[in-house]
Length: 390
Image (cartoon, rainbow, N blue to C red; front, top):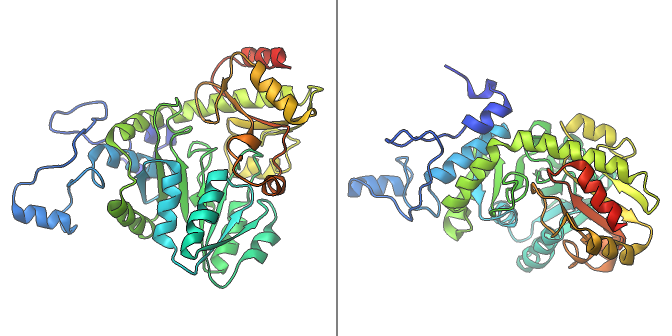
């Protein structure tokens, strides 16, 4: 019999988590139902208490959602995954399950703006405190830890500077202080990076991005061991920010082509980044696939590809950035990323616009920065679009 752990990622992306009904469908089935019928009162009681496996209510048990969770867990080389309504609800569920009043978080200062808002504004209301450390400064992570620190949280590469965190080194610091390490793997997806292999305890996904890959649906997930995922599942079962069956079905299809798409995203992004480095209007390009990137060697070791997102700074500041964004004709002006269609945005006034100017400056996000999520169009046409914009 084939061992799931011995199969290649390309095979797992297509075959893992397949559940066939009595009809023997070849493609993944979509179970659009709010509840499931049981054969007896005893069976209902056993399923509700978890003594018997089976499906009860689609808020927390649905075959399509379960198939997505199993396939994603296989790709991350994890014991278990739990799906959520969005990437942000995945982070919320993780925190609600593993933190309590009086606990402390150490987080990267370069986090996505909504994550910082969640930590500062909402978790702060309930007595959870947070300290921020520079993504690449290991001594800062060490210094930020406190006796009540329960969680280290980072995203690598981060948004939008594409800084690379040393997962193994930060995991060692976190574990020495008795804390968990959670890694947001949105930019890479499991096709390019598997943080659990480097010592992370939990992996967070915004499946809305590269996992879907076509900008169709929202979704999120948390991946890890059975022991760490179970309390997250129990929170989701009670609170309800779970993934719908339809969205799970779409995301299952996204996983099937994830590896192929990520290779193409990486190829296009590298060519575009190399071209941008030669342009006189550009003062700096941020992309882990460039030799000029400060963590290039770490990215080569930790990832199997540099990803599909890059950022660059224009010499003319905000005026130049806005002018370029307004002038492009092919790229989509939207803050979403991970799409087959190339997107372009101004981080300082969109994804990180809710941060104070001081916080943006501390995170290295300038007014002249532009972020591009490089899609699957022909690279020559993307360059032509930027040339016309410049």
